[in-house]
Amino acid sequence: MPDTAGQHPNQAENANAMDTQTRGNPLVIAVDASTTATKAVAFDPRGATVAVGRAPLDRSSPQPGWQEQDAEAWWRATTTALRDLAASIDVANVRALCITHQRETFVCLDEAGEPLRPAILWLDTRAADQIRRLGTATVHERSGKPPSTTPSLYKIAWLAEHEPEVMRRTATVADVHAFLVERLTGRRVTSWASADPLSVVDMRTFSYAPDLLALAGLHVDQLPELVAPGAILGLMTAAAAGATGLPAGLPIVAGAGDGQCAGIGAAVTRASLAYLNLGTGLTLGTHADEYRWSRAYRTLSSPIPGRWMLEALLASGVLSLAWFRDLVARDREPGAEERLQRLAADTPPGSGGLLFLPYLTSAETPYWDPLARGAWVGLRDDHGLGHMYRAILEGIAYEQRLVLDLIEESTGAPVALLRAMGGGSRNRLWLQILADVLGRPIAVGDQVETTALGAGVLAAAGVSLEGDADLITTAERMTGEWRPMEPSEHRAAVYEVGFEVYRQVYPALAGLFPRLSGLATADLRPPFPPGRSDANPDK
Image 1 (cartoon, helix red, strand yellow):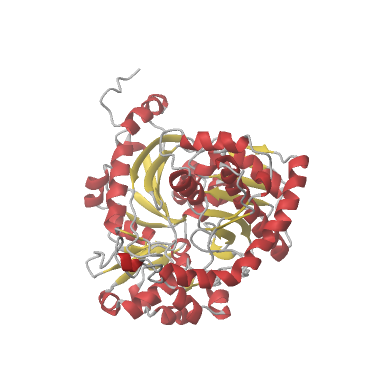
Image 2 (image 1 turned 90 degrees about the vertical axis):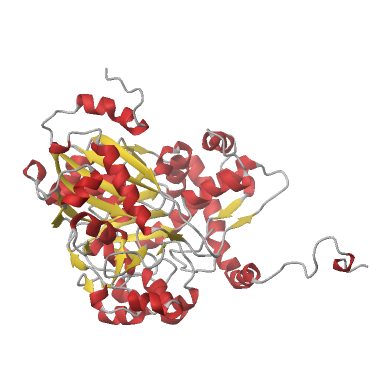
């Protein structure tokens, strides 16, 4: 038994894995650069997690609706996570590295590859005016993305209008994948499955679309070269090797966005399966062999070159639970989530007639309304924290029922099983609620790093690990077993009533959100300093 005293926590966590790891066993590394943290995960050829390194990330909101991040922090977090990982494995066994990442987030770089301003995040909502003016059916059909707050095109157009000097000096608009790949390899190149959420890629050809670039105020030489996901796009430089603790010359394989990688990490490669990624932003998606576009979903490049994923998005997924825990329940002590789950578990299905509309930042699929916001409906004086927390779990589940019904209607292909992953998949109460509301099994696997595993699958197939270059068979080999959680007929009947009410809530409130938005930006401070008698209209 090794002595782990004095080790970094992740090194101690990985010590047992290192003991059992066969010295000659080949490994692949996935870097998962999400909104809140970067993880580096080493996988063996069967998809087992060998070791993990982590580093947190912060974000800022300089104005209401603005969400930004220091792009240099992406690199610092990546090198920290990789050094952490490298200390726990035999780096001579590593065969390839692949990146998955937060999507739509981008940064403007100068000729030297240095950021010109903070990166703008996927959940930033500043570009409502640009969405209104530039978002058309033609843009949707070409890009696969309905006009909404998430596609980068509108935020790039906002920069062109409000920060023209930044855009004049911009040599490259880089997605997170492109930024990290350049730091690792010296090449300004990205996967088309990483760039397509920018909404400047023609989703039929997987190449940049001149008309979309013109709308964003860009020209093609301001964007990275595009390659297919799974292609080897470069080798790790000596400088990057020194920063990460990994070998120089290590192949870097083209990755994909976190949602797409979650899908391939769950081996969702046919239309009868769907993935449900219960993260900060919640995504539900399925596979498509043909190009489709609809307001019921956004169309993305699959990690399987030449295929697509149809995906619904809710920006405030686990974000809604964290908001409630921190700002409503005001419980920041260890075990807060477990306490709230127990309260919710003691609350009957239907939350005592309380509904929650989970649009804390905006509405994405299927309404694409940047001004929509969250709402409680049916709140009574006898509702407590348990009712409210359960209503959030149920509201998000109703939202998934809404979008899944629309996806199935659009494709004509019923989904028989959903595979859940992400931080929320550890909440068994929520999984059961989802199964009951959706009326079909929700399966969970042993692998907690499903999104990273998707990048690991791309890395393994990219270098033909185990002699297999086929992405689908590699995914099936590395994904492992999934255990279904079956729906309850009794609870499903209760939720059928709740869903029929829920689907009417947004249409009933939609006309009010623009007026509420005006209140949020108005200067409503008292006209007189507090304490002055003339501030009291009765005097």
